Length: 428
Image (tube, rainbow, N blue to C red):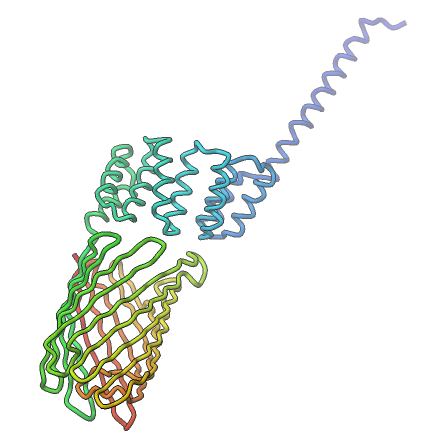
């Protein structure tokens, strides 16, 4: 009969071996799981650096599926949507997160940044105000709020907020750049210009002008201009002014007028209004934004009255490419004749050519057809024409630019008009 003393060690060691193997198996599960799911945040950052937004979203969607109640993971999804330019989806995601977790300043800042990119400045300020209230000692929150204040035209408040951000974090690059931009952002533009028309059937026309455009606040802009005309040796002058009001979500409305010493070669009086509205479409797709502009312009001559109705659509593409398509209807009423309408159309393509630091060179191509030049000395208003034009704009720096153009117009009866001009702008 075997002794129990001799059996105890064998059972004891067998139990220890079984416990060790079971523990090793259990420990192996999370190790293998981690091998299958590496650091997903690093994956997202890597995809973001490569701007591979589809892959980044696949990673965060996988993590959301594994932990749908984890608001930190949902916040990462909102960030990726924001980075990729899918702003409406990012806004929805942040709002759903904030229904559950309302005391995380990061989520309020994320929502505020999305609102700001969407142009919803007031909503952005409310979101960022809440974020600052939750954590007033965050420099990045202060800098984001300063950007929103600047976008809202509150330059003094933006400057104070950028200064608070630098006090909290003297190394904050965004806050320092924000202060610099506030000091150097021009609000006024003075422009000098000169135009020439060379005809094959009469003497040349020459025009000169100077203008001042002032943006007083985010909502109000004024413009003043003085023009000087030489029409086949007959001289005339004109003074014009306009005021523009802008309202978030509604666009811009411009009203203005002009009066001058006409000498029967330019309008004696003018009045006009213009409505402009734009929509941001995307920051990543081919179509970035669409802008629509329409207006009316009345001209009163000594012997005629002219009304123009115009509409222009501007389509913006990446890299400062843009296409403009316009149509104008001209209502003419000349002494001794009836009233008639004449149409005309225009297409203009703008594109970048080169860039060197602050310097920029861009070009444009223009084609127009229809009835035009009703304001010349003969006030014909009844000829058909096709116009081909080119333009250049050279931005010397943030405060100076030069623009030039040249065009060739072919009219009925083999008449032609070769035009060219130059302008120089100073921003301060």
